[in-house]
Length: 70
Image 1 (tube, rainbow, N blue to C red):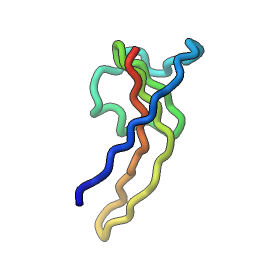
Image 2 (cartoon, helix red, strand yellow):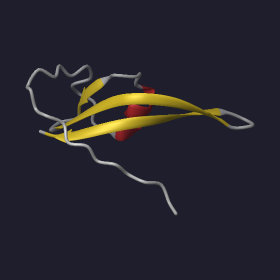
Image 3 (cartoon, one colour):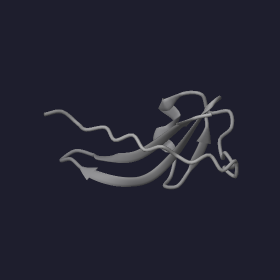
Image 4 (cartoon, rainbow, N blue to C red):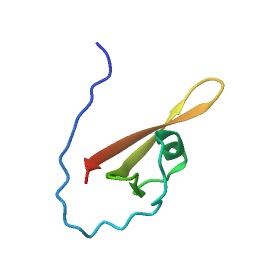
C-alpha cells in the first residue's frame, strides 16, 4: 500500500496574509518553517507540521502541507 493523501478543505476567511507572495514552485517550499503561509499565484499553501525522518546518512523533513485554491 502506498502513501495516503488526505485533503482537508480550508475555510476562506480572507484574513490569510501570505509570507512569500512571489513563490512560484513547490521546490522552494522545502525551505519553509512550520505554520508558514504561502501564496503561489492563486493557490495558498500552509505548512501545518514538520517531522524529522532520520536516515543513516541524513535527516529528511516530512511536511504536512495544506493546499487551497483561491
